[in-house]
Each structure stands twice: as C-alpha cells, then as structure tokens.
Length: 277
Image (tube, rainbow, N blue to C red; front, side, top):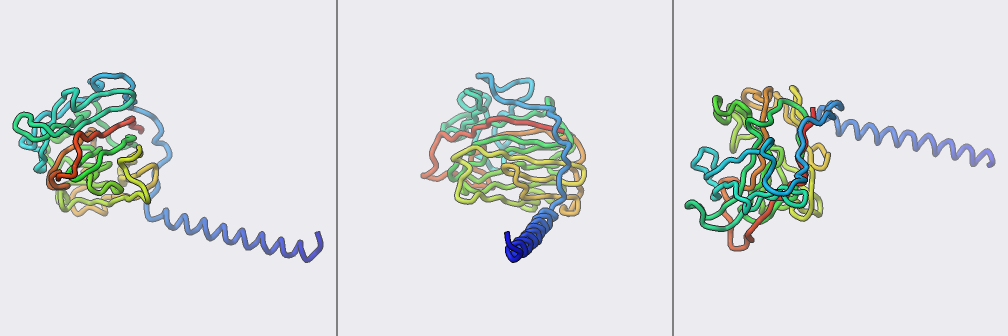
C-alpha cells in the first residue's frame, strides 16, 4: 500500500470513529429522556406458562364475577363468569373469550382474572405475552391494582395499566397510571403504535419495570413511557404491593359499544405471565 493510500485510510478511519461517536452520543441523548431500569430485575418470583389444560391455576388466579354494577364497570356491557366458555387453558394458552349472548341480564359474557390474595408484589418487572382481539367495543387489558383497595377505594389505592387496548385501534396500546387526583379521564398515559402491524395478528410482550422512582412501560422490550412522582399532580401511591388483573371487557366509556361490524366470539390469548424482582 502506497503512502497516499495509507494516508487516505487513516483519514477514513478517523472520520468513521467520529461518526460512530456522534451516533453513540445521539443514542445516549435519546435514551436519557427516561431513567434507565436497573439490571437486577432477573429473579423470577412468579410465572404461569399455561401449560396445563383446563381451568386456570387456582393457586394464582381468582375471578371477578358479575357486571359493572359491582363497582368496577365503566359502563361495560359484559357479565364476567368463570365458565369454560369464557375462560380456559388449552394448548399452552390462557384463552379469554367474549361472547354475544344473553346471560344474567347482560348481552355479552367474558372473564376477568386476578391474583388478589394469591400473589401481590411491590416493584419489579411484570410482563405478559399476549395476542389481542380486535373490533369496535373490545377492551382487553393487562393491569394492576393496589392490594389495599378494599380499605382504600379506587383511585386512592392506585392503578397501573400495563397494557390497555381499544379494539377499533388495532395498532395502538396505552400504558397508564391512575391515582388520587389523576384518574379516569385525568390519568397519566402514553400510547405506543406499531408500524405496519397490528396487535391482533400476532403475539407481543407487554411489560413494566417498576421501582420506587419510576414506572417504565415496554412493548416487546421497547421503552416508550416513563412515569415518575414528578409527573403526577397528586399523591404517588405506587410504593406498596399491587395484584395483577387480566380481562376482556365489552363496551364501556373507554371504547364505546360494539357495532354491526364487530365479530363474536372474540378471544384474548395469553402465552405467559412472568414477574421478576
């Protein structure tokens, strides 16, 4: 290699190093919008892989039974049951099915599972791999409530919506917190939209990493939202144990009622639920 070529090569190498440094700096700056999670959330403390056919594992899951008149309705239209027609485990999946049928005075049935009194934890990584339903009026969610909700009613108990979805917007999910002074329409929320894809055509991992300083929201390990005590206008109530809920609602103030184009039955498939600390 002659001297001119060597000189040109050295110049090119320097330019490449400078370009790489700039790219790295840009990446760091974009990441600095959010405080990064700790790397020690790798101790698995609860998991359900849904590998036993039949009813969900009763050591982990209980049920809310009834309608919105029980105090958690949001003007929803379904009657939640524990029937196998609405909730079952088959072929490695938890299957929650919303059906259009007259049942106990309601025009639809579905299911809502929760770990209340069975598994509750403060802080850690909570995640589930889910394929969502779609259509006007479908409202699936993977979320959490403060374990003291019976003595400290909502919204004071706190709520973390790890994933919430309007069926008529099949490419977008939301991550949200509710608390005293920032609940319902005043909640603190941010959406995540897939590019050229939909949440009803494949499985995606929805998760949070939660510490005393923040709640980080992820889709497929992409961090898209961070909520800290400075972001909420009221009391930060995310410093105690919460339990997990998974449900498929029909209708309600968040999504509106199904229409003539909404197909039934609708299914929410959950591949796994895992919790780390």
